[in-house]
Length: 277
Image (cartoon, rainbow, N blue to C red; front, side, top):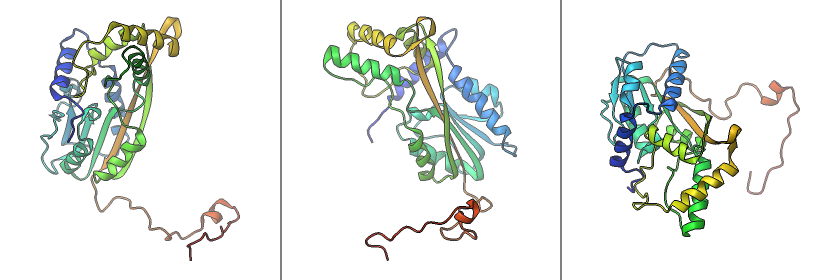
């Protein structure tokens, strides 16, 4: 399997972020608040919780009884040991996201709940576009600089592939304002979200690339008071370990009432196409 992420670089980036006096964890705090809110809407108490995260202190403070699990390729989760598994802001760095989901599904008791939060495909689209344009103009080539993140429609399908019942994918986008592109890149380092791609450029980048990218960014994505806009899309994945008591979709053709009758609309029969009986 080709590695997308360099695990050593990712661990180093996170350690550097946490070593700062004020790490930029506002995205994690947003997710933590959202997860708590979603759990209040579930009419159930969870007593055997596992949390997969690269930032254990933040989540341990919120869920002191939970088992904290590092987001390595092989998760230290026992089969059917938990009634709730939270994958917290780490799945976008996974080299095998489906494998991560399958491991979480197997760790759940029947009818156990899974919640994942990760960065989605619209995250930092402004930075990605400006860096690519500038590097192509200055050097004539491109190098991987921003993590390629999945789209919400694709992530919903991954839940089904992993064997979850009642899968749901939804999300929201947060717009943040920065002084300039360099301020944004500084904040990404303080988040532990710097470039940890396995195929990243291993030599210094020409200053002209960053200078042109910063100028393009300020022009293309302005914000009030001379600042710039950066997008952070957070996607939530929710699914349940299968259980016989869960709702099942009806078989096609098993409806007791026609849709046209329910809507009070005339039913229109389409002519058969070639090849249909």
